[in-house]
Figure 1 (cartoon, rainbow, N blue to C red):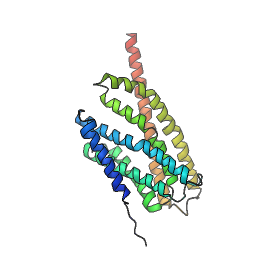
Figure 2 (figure 1 turned 180 degrees about the horizontal axis):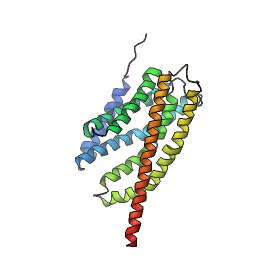
Figure 3 (figure 1 turned 90 degrees about the horizontal axis):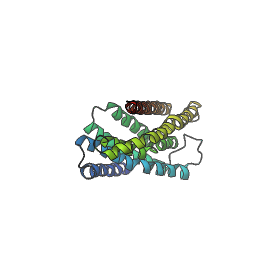
Figure 4 (figure 1 turned 90 degrees about the vertical axis):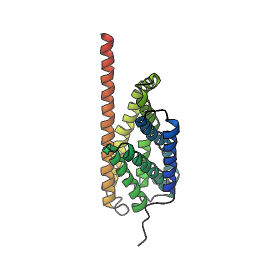
Length: 249
């Protein structure tokens, strides 16, 4: 039986790259920020460095190597595996960030752990099904630039008027974009995945334990995303009502 290697040379390389970017952000770019804000901002910065490139290389990997887009259990291609390794390197670094600076953020730590579980099992144990995982990665990261700029603005909105203005301007379009991607397109694709797996089309290629556990993780993540954006919409509505009531007074 062939040995299962949990890491390839590219994962340490990507991890070191994201570690360097994080340290650059923490000690140089955000060096004048409050210590807690510096950590959060540095996490946003590596998320920016991961998000858009991940969308681009995942899209490239799917368009140029995926022959049958209806087959969600096709063998992983080399370029698809590289995308998974790139994201594993990022999530390992951001997980370390949360463990060090925000150990009580259990939900985020669990999110990163289960995401790593999906990527690692797809890449190193199952060797099939990356096409579906990469579509979900694209949907998850396509909102990254807007979300991270919005988050960075939220950190400084109390101290910097320009940040408060940017946060106010960005909130409605970001919420709409996020709602469409995570609340409509994402669930539709996850439904397609579920129908494909339940039909038995993947049974000879992807073990049942793998796709069932993937679906549990993915559905949970989608549900939490929807709850998060609903809560933000509610906060925006409350803020609008408060501003309206102050004008009346």
